[in-house]
Image (cartoon, one colour):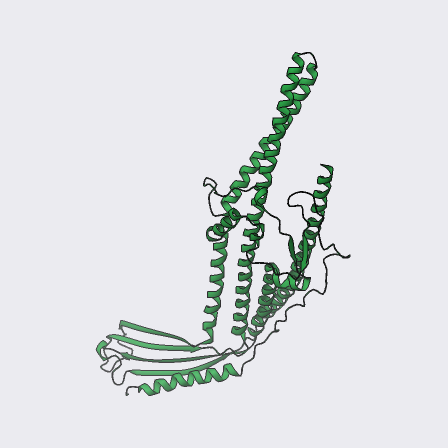
Length: 429
């Protein structure tokens, strides 16, 4: 035997790559091609036209709020409240909140899974070195030229394997993983919006509780003064003892409402600490009261067709539907024949120093076609399961869209009714 020239090895590799390229170019991707569901056709969020402005109220921050169609929502929407402590707290929370950091790492993992699956487009190459010492039975022929039954054998080998994507199974798998990465990206966006919304709600809640505590304390102070006046009047004989008892009961009933408010404020501070990435024993520098929070006068209002493009929960459901669609193609392709191409090149010798020497080389190139014939219905039912999952994802997408529309409609009704209730309270006062 003589050594295999390097050019021959290159020819083997080129032939393998050429054959794989031809097969890949001629391949098709089985299964349904994804078509995104149509956007909602509705132009409103209620059966009857809604008012374009809320009721106004005399006094500070009582101006009517306007609904502005197709107004862009700023990315840092909380700045519309014009509260520097709130802006600082949210900026700090975006850097330290563990839920947001976890969602970011989940997105990184999803993107890495896409890159890993794309590696199946290319031939897989591995190298190995296998030194052994072995003894052959004397009744068997020796594997070396001098018929020794005890000898060393060293084999170095380069192996190449390639499975052409004939039916697009790998392309559909990559498509599914890309859609899952998109879903994770929208999940990150949803986590971002949830965090900022919870922080704003917690800040407004704290401001409200501080106002309630201050008002309750004012009432207690006023009732205490009234009680002192009654006691002086009773000393003069102008007020009966029953009137004193009644006023004392009223004062104590008011005092009883203060501890629950203080408890709620403490819990609200704990919530702000955790949302900002702190433990409850760590102080949150920001303090909030209603005088330093301004309601935005212009409220963005998107049409239903635009809403599905803006809401991360809807976009995430759309990406999950896309991933389920691609999995139907993966399950379909598993029922079709496949080709595996392999090539090996290497050297084997009984003496290490002679490795890759004259007469030690070997190579092989082969291909195998495999086709499932009988699997007890496993592959068929896996395809049917993938199709059912696809239909399930379609219904879940429709449910998410309907819930999103309901959320907006509920918010619009709440803004209108709260403004009317505030105006009625102002008139009553």
